Length: 297
Image (cartoon, rainbow, N blue to C red):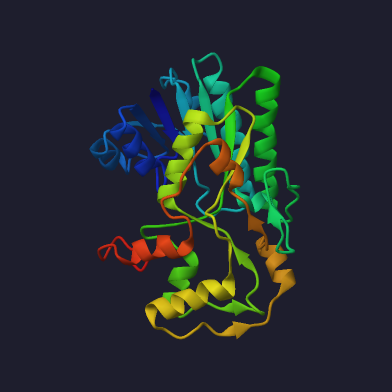
């Protein structure tokens, strides 16, 4: 297959390398040429464009069988989300119109679920988040699903949980810096997935996802904040983080939620088997990585 990866960075670059290893012809689209050497070393053909500027897409080849949009916002606010996700996907769809595209995978986020009661959420659960950025992600999903229904655009959506892996792991890094805090009773649930399993889930979706369908990409075991830090403290023989009062209003402003994301559909329909089924397996593997590649660095 000829594959285009849009946003060929933390997830996209190793995804492309794995697809090359499997025998596919892979192109990687980025806004700058800074990673061109890395892409070429992985066997990926670099393409330079900005999906928020459709005129930069026009000169590029578009005869791709599979396209993956795993662009990241870089931590921006609502306006950045609107440009990158909503307008970016709209521009990609317009650019790909009339191409031989067989599958388009968009990596959304489990932040579209605004539930705060610790309940289990599935792909059929309501998506009514409070955070403006998450509402834009919901609008982006609706844009893609409308394109599926109205003009048979072959899009499927992965709602990805918090990603950790080499050099990444927000709560873990905060723990090591002594900046982690347990909020209230620590019952708020964290949903995570290792980067290697994000890559595996994307490939499974490219092969088997049906257009118009949504799949949660999270590991098997949502874990309370308290139990996550208990494991880390025991594993690293360090003291537990201090407890601070839970601040519901601050959580609302930050878009913090409390839910358990189910991956049952991903496993059942796409037949994906996780390399790291829970945070313990994933972080244990990361702790064994050489210095410079682990989440501690």
